[in-house]
Length: 210
Image (spheres, rainbow, N blue to C red):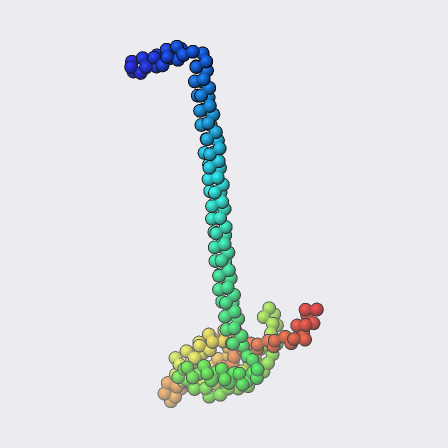
């Protein structure tokens, strides 16, 4: 500490001994150097700092845009999946509704279903069309089905019938049999199926659009 103090005193003494003009030149050089340093800081460091800040803001904005685009892409994929699910559901519902000749449709569909079960269709009775009222307006077709088989077999067939035609309604069901039937029973049921609405004609669609 003493050496450093003496060194400072030597520097001060040296400056005091300098001529006034020389001292002014030294002060001037110091001021110019200080101004140069300030210029470098202002025009280089601060400029680069501003550019760095702007770049960081641009990166942040771009990141937000990427996240938004990714969110929209996921939403679009979900919309496509949802539309496909709805379409599949509608097609399944339409496939379970009577179309064309009602009795021919019932004979075909019930026969195909019975082939998957160890039961025998003994009779299919033609039915009638009717209009429904209330919230679920539309046309229905009611038909009768007679089937024979073991008790469990008939139960499984009826359950599959309800699952296959989810819009249908079993109005009545009766089971007959006795000891001489050797475990075989007869069942008679009445089922009401929904009729697929006809597609609107092109003329009607054109009239509605105008």
